[in-house]
Length: 220
Image (cartoon, rainbow, N blue to C red; front, side, top):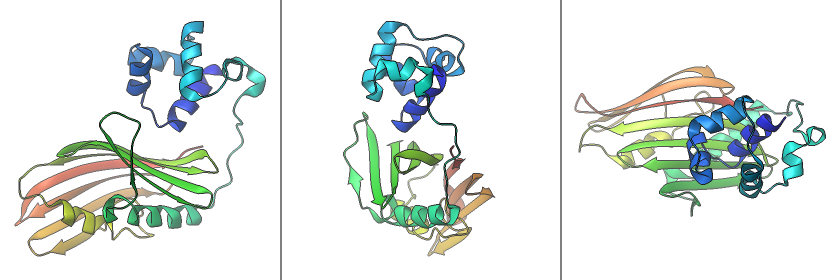
């Protein structure tokens, strides 16, 4: 179905509905209606979509070319192992930053065999981002996050230290608690790799100086 293909290729290209709408000079509500199958894009927009997604118009509109509904075979243990490795080789380690094609975006990329990891975020003191994992060029996992720096005492290197301690039990952000000197990092999460949500905070001398939230899971 056309609406499903628009959703699939938007996410594969790591575009939000707002970003795709901006590229097409339409409202986000229009993208939502397309993806929900309430209305269909005109030929003009189909041409633009095919160029953005780098696919043919025929592929977008023909049902016999539709995306497979079969569940992708996935070993969650392998996924977790890769995710931890990717996190420890990108933002937290100050490595593998790449030039993003998105305006004002910071982006990190890591690849190992059939898996690819992308971490793209916007802002600094107030920031929002998304981590995506592809298995054999098909998106299989995602996490969205948002954070706010609340005080000038915030130490970005301390946050990176905490994020470097990601492990198999909590392969999302940092550990349940981590302290160094007068800084303390606390993370709370419910769920597992397939579906989860959590929050994190940093305290300096018992004063909260940073807070963030995150959620995500497996995509099929």
